[in-house]
Length: 248
Image (cartoon, rainbow, N blue to C red; front, side, top):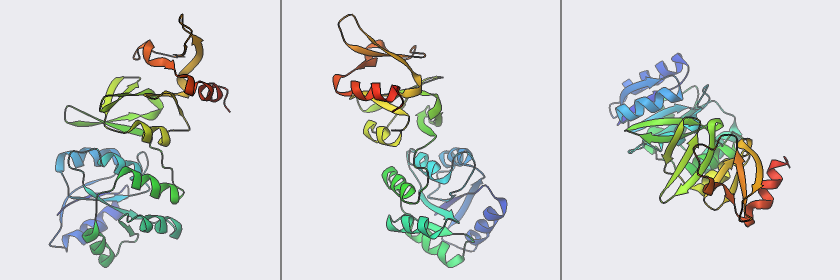
């Protein structure tokens, strides 16, 4: 089994490499000090398992694991963590693989043997139960065989089109293979649904205006990427959009 080690602390990476070297069933194939580099290496090296630190600057372990799930062949994830007992209970209850720091050989071996692939919903649930931030700071798109991280702060709109979600952002448009319903739940604090097929960032809405045929539509700060027809607010969602614009 090929193993990628991810931790922002070099001593922690060295410790895990040493333990893996003593295990004939596992092959150390690479290391990364942050989530972005971990995603690049995972796409290149195709590890079977990623040993992933939770607390890292930038992309933390939970968000990195979300994006690892976007790979064509997602690896199994085992978290390495120094979190308190409540976080550990949350992980254990949801069958999330973890190893407490400082890492002990017996626990690492057991976790590697039990490593399993995690659904995004499992990650979100565990993070929420452990009082960790569940919402990602990026969404992950695949383009030309590469993973592209799009900052949520730069996204104006998520739009459902056939089997995919179109992400309209500052640098253009990308497609992601996710559920609009799940996105609506995850980013409920910063996005509002305007009709059944679109979520819009509240910060990007300038105002609501009436169209010539009496419908309501939103005006974005920069709507060059989005067709005006996509910005019509359904009657079902109009009251909520107005409420969010007032900051209630």
